[in-house]
Image 1 (cartoon, rainbow, N blue to C red):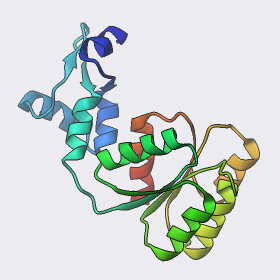
Image 2 (cartoon, one colour):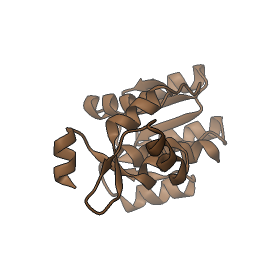
Image 3 (cartoon, rainbow, N blue to C red):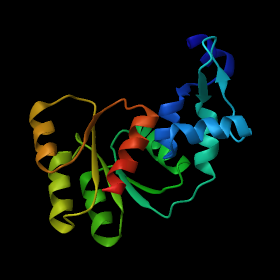
Length: 182
């Protein structure tokens, strides 16, 4: 599989993973492959692998009208998360601190929040509690570079998924879609 990724210059996803990211069934992905709507690489075993550039191309064509606030103090992580979500057609605003995020949350509407747990001025779980006090139904996803059992438990009490960084593109997108559907 590494050889396939190197030969295409990109990462590849299995059909089921591509379907999850695009929000369609695996059968739809296969149909698109056979119709020429999406390019794939065929493995020696006859399985299809979809280059992530193809997924990006399809996602970029969509515009959802959904607004997401990403709160992340690490510039590189924040830029990458924003880029990934924008490629899915979401309108993304970002904040570096809890205070900046809170100011945006009380003055603008967001359909979903993605919050880093270790912010310079507040724990992400505390920010999430404030957001939930303001809007009990808004979906939130917690990201963290650390596996902290106490913080994971707090996030669980708030019904917030806790993803450990670095998070794979398709897992983040799947989590976003899942939270927006509930």
